[in-house]
Length: 353
Image (tube, helix red, strand yellow):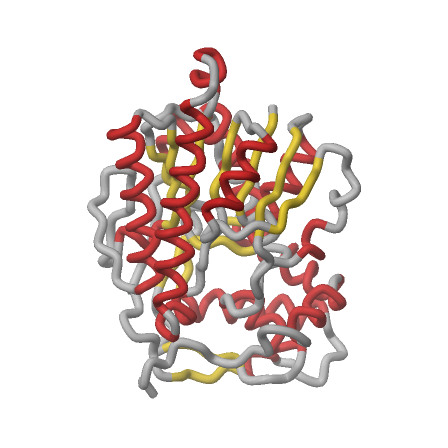
């Protein structure tokens, strides 16, 4: 099988690419424009595979995207290219609209042109898997979970742009018959995550003795999913899911933000007994909340377990300890990131605080 992955140098995308190369016999074309969050270092261990190739292509460039699809002739497209950080979307929403909505529309059109030209057997085999987020559903109260039938209610420019892309994907299926599958996932964590996100930011700030910023009261709740569990879920969905269907993917590991940070601090205290920053929890500081900060997310992942047999292999406790250890063991990876596009500054203030 030939798989075209968009955004394969990003956090989740690189995990998908690594997993496909290491656990299947599929061929991959990674289509990525290598913005600040796209990192070839995340693919170093599989870059030499004769089943892996790379195209530096921007999904906002329709002619270039058409060429990539037509030349590679995939059996499956997994669409992970996206702007993903809520705070960054508050500072610059237009970039999110262009990448997440216009870029997705471009991919749909490039894919439709390619798919229309396939023979009947190849048409039936072909799939486009669009990878989205649970943030499109908005904010939960103290109980309940998101599911595949939850109405959309996005509250940030990021989640609104992802909701828009989900609707475009559905429309191309309903209008043109394009065989698409959508998945919506909970918060990911694990190796190679760009350090603007909560867990790597806290790890790296703690290692450097910097303040650990907690938005508001720290009581916002997220359902945490290890990225390698997510990668395996995405491969199952892409290869065995039903066209026109949506699958929710979650770790069933709800934690408040402050509990996540305290857990990371405790692991660092254990792993770095000689650190002058112990106890790392003393670095915690509360800062003005993010505008429009959703209170709680939680995923009902029973459909993917029931229909595709997937369930997470990592608990939060096992996964977070492996994640902290990865950042300790891969200092050169994050030092190169911090020397470039992002040095840990707060984004998304939008005049607050």
